[in-house]
Amino acid sequence: MDILLWCLIIASFIIAFVGLIYPIIPAVLFIYVGFILYGVFFDFGSMTISFWIVEVLLTMLLFVVDYASNLFGVKKYGGSKAAIWGSTIGLLVGPFVIPFAGIILGPFIGAILAELVIHRKAFKESVQVGVGSLLGFLGGAVMKGLLQTIMVVVFLVYVL
Image (cartoon, rainbow, N blue to C red; front, side, top):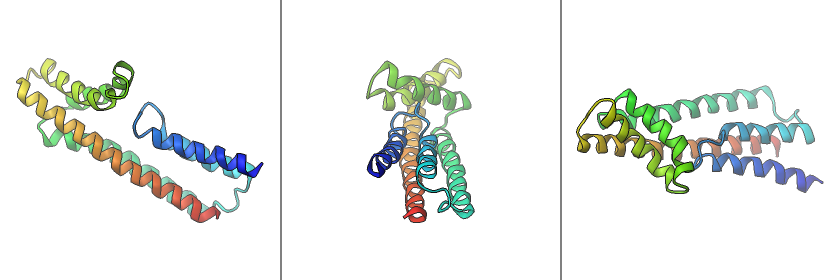
């Protein structure tokens, strides 16, 4: 039975990492599902107040990185707030419109369209903003993956 329960905990962590590629999946929520599953089926006692403080701080950092990476990527390449929104909408819609490639093309196209339509920027400028959005997304995904890995490692240090 313990093996099955650990498989559920590990599966919730894996789903969290899939959320890096498909941002419609609330990645951090699934990490916490793993924590809760462990607590319910094994022991909440090993997850002390210091554990929860560290995890909440890492979660807050993860949200800041998520927002800042997109903002930095778009702004560095001359994008507007509309491009940030376009990129975010493209990130959420892209994987459904263009499976697999949509995760990359969605934010890129969303930022370009926002700059072209709302701010009437030249195509070349809009494409630069799209590239910035894409680089911001990819950099953010790498950083979020690192932070999620740290969250899981902290969990394992506390419970094992």
